[in-house]
Image 1 (tube, rainbow, N blue to C red):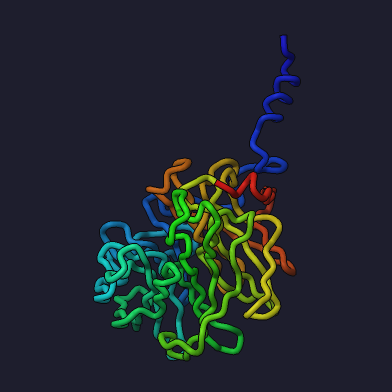
Image 2 (tube, rainbow, N blue to C red):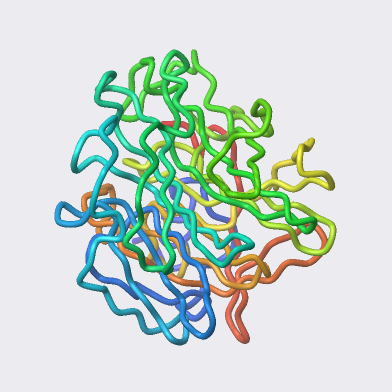
Length: 343
């Protein structure tokens, strides 16, 4: 007969080598705060109100939710982007982000399928006088490198000197390479690009520069960039691996200059199994400009990206390290290269 301690040792020996130390409790993040499908969320705080935007939900091009306290969220019965530009395909808008510019108005960046290249996406831009919209799109895409695979996941950023930028992903994995998200053979780059903008937030200034790309530990891609500045350090949050699998995560890289070089953290911030086992393929993080609040999505069921719910978390930044804040519970995860990240 196998004694209980021996049986436990045998079971532990055969667990996947993706976690290190226990993932304790559910106190370090909050969710789902939106139980319906609300993927690729981004938020902005204006006054005492937080406003979040998400990928299309089949009803609205850009769904909206609001919160007075970052904890309780209410879906708005409106579309932030009710009219799409002629270059895009209806019902295929993704990953919006909103910033407020110096004149008090708002600029939205979003990805949409290019009608002239149905397997490629471009980045659009729209403006509004109110944070919830309605936003009016520009007639032409802001960024549209279809020969490189297109572009997705834009995120606006205002530097300490007031200069505006948008970061985005070159969607190289859309060029092929097998796998559920493409590029399983690693034949394509999926770089994160940094593009300077004029003060109006809708006009490009100069050429984009590459600030990050995938490595072996990232699987076929990196995507969903989000850039903030805390003190004198730039933090570039991103997701790696395929969103349709269990290895999708939230990671980050740091740099002392906006153009890099960026150094990836040795450990991802959140992975499947986090929050006491509650998180499934967490990704699409958006972090507030002070580096204290984060929203992200997590699949409602393992290996099923059809329902990606919104979660919130408090984070702590110290030097070049980011951690999930908690008064009494901690999470400890470890990047394990190919074992964790490769599909």
